[in-house]
Length: 386
Image (cartoon, rainbow, N blue to C red):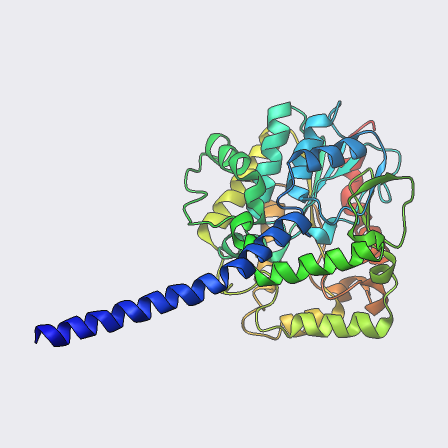
C-alpha cells in the first residue's frame, strides 16, 4: 500500500514538474508580448498622464489637435477644464454621437464640446466634478441623451469612465448624495492589455505602420487644419473624422448601418430590458442639481440611421429605445427643458447620406435636426447676451 502510494506521488510530482517545465518554455514568449505591448502601446494606456495634459494645452491655446486617437478623452476633458481661463457660454456633453456639435451651430459664442466616446452617466458626473472644482459652470448645457444612459449594465461593461473614477464618485457623493456609485471588482486596462494577444496584434500593426512612416500611428500634434486624412479634434472640442471615414461610399454606410443593428448585442444596449433604478435616480438628481446652479439645459436625442432604427425598434431586446425617449421627454416637460432631436430619423427626413454609420449622424444630418427644432431653443438663446 505504501509502495503504491509512493509510486503515485512520484508520478504526480513528475507530471507537475513536467508541466512547470513546459510553462517555462513559453515564459520568454510571454515576456516578449509584455515588452512589445508596453513599448508600442497602440492605445497609449502606459504613457505618462502628462500625455493628455499636453493635448489639453494645445486645445486650450486655440489650436486644433491632429491625430488624437491615442488620447484618453476622459483625462483630456479633465485637464482641458482645468486650463479654461473663463467660464464657457455653451457646453456640449454626450457621447461620440454629439461630437459634431460646436461653433458650427453656435457661431461667435464660447462653445466647448466635452463629449467622450461611449459616455455613460458616470462620465457626466466626473466631468461636472471638474467644472465644480474650478467653479466654471457653463451658462447653457446641451446634453446628448443616448438610450444606454438608463441601462444599468452599460457602466459595468463600459469601464472607460474609470479614468475619472475619483471625480465621478466624489460628485455623486457630495453633490447628489449617492454613496453606491462603484462597488464592482475592476481590472484596469493596464493589467488586462499587458498580456493581451489582441493588444499584441495592435502593437505589431503600429510598429509596421511606423516602419513605413504611416502618420496615422504617430502621436498627436497641433494643426491649423479643420479636415485632413487623419482625425482632428477642433479647438471647440468637435471631432473631424479622417478622410477615409468622412468620405465613405453610400453602400458602405448602408452596410455598416445594417451590420450595427443586426449585432447579437447592440452597442451598450445589451441586457437592457428595463431602466436601472440607480440610473434614473442619478439622472434626475443631476438635472435637479444643474438647475439649482442656474444652468440652462437643452436635451438632445441623437438620431439613428433610418435602417438601423427600423431594426432596433422591431427587435424585442432593443425596442426599449422607444421607452427611453419617452422618459427623456417626460423629464424635459417636468423641468421645462426643450427636447431637440429623436431616435427616429424619419421625423427629420434624414437619409443614408446624413450618416457616417448606424448611429453617428454627420454634420449635415445634425444641421437638419437643429434647423427643424430651432424654434424650441431660440427662447433660451435669447436669454443670454453672448
